[in-house]
Image (tube, helix red, strand yellow):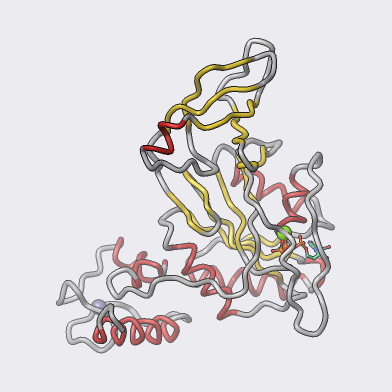
Length: 291
Ligand SMILES: Nc1nc2c(ncn2[C@@H]2O[C@H](COP(=O)(O)OP(=O)(O)OP(=O)(O)O)[C@@H](O)[C@H]2O)c(=O)[nH]1
Ligand SMILES: [Mg+2]
Ligand SMILES: [Zn+2]
């Protein structure tokens, strides 16, 4: 659930004999010797449980289904990409970069458009419509409208999810609204640049009342992702959808730019963004890894 200085806070699969749900654990030395680092989200085996003091030791580590590095989290099922509809205003290129970066994890990506109370409903549904064209079922939420959080709760029930997105878009506020007992620090968006203040600093999984676990993460303002020509097409739902529907190009390593025999439909909004990134990727691979 959380890493705290020298301790790991571990949630139990089943409550202990006196109803404990969590134990404060140290790491067994042989874990460290095996070069294994425990991450938040890991399934671990415990030994030496001291139920009276609520202590135990982590003795083993299960293999991970996924591993995110920023934030460092294991076994995530869903990545929520949170961007504000206003304050700071929605920048489509930044949103696209966050989505592409989230897609590199290989898990379900859900765009969440926050602060819907600051704009009109027509503008909010315009963005939802637009994102549908990108291949996403985006959710519009607002702290002021609790019903907007219910749909999100339902989509998170049962899994492990993480909030990502720029600073100041309301990630911590969202988690506070979902988990009333929490009181995470939030901060007003500052000054002319409309940047957040990077209020959130550590990673922790929180239990959601409707089921599921959700982690906050510190916002950052320019997500990086490896631009690899092989992987890039698969980061676009617009392309994935076509390949899954059986569209095949003449060349198996088709970059879907100007190749003869490319069968891809190019009439989608982000095709220009795709081409620019693919040109960059091709340029990088021509220059080789040494740059
Ligand atoms: N109007 C409005 N403001 C909101 C909403 N949610 C959050 N805010 C405000 O947005 C500001 C930033 O919120 P945070 O929750 O700290 O943002 P964050 O994404 O966690 O920021 P970092 O931790 O820096 O990444 C705060 O002033 C919040 O009060 C909302 O639904 N509507
Ligand atoms: Mg925060
Ligand atoms: Zn093609």
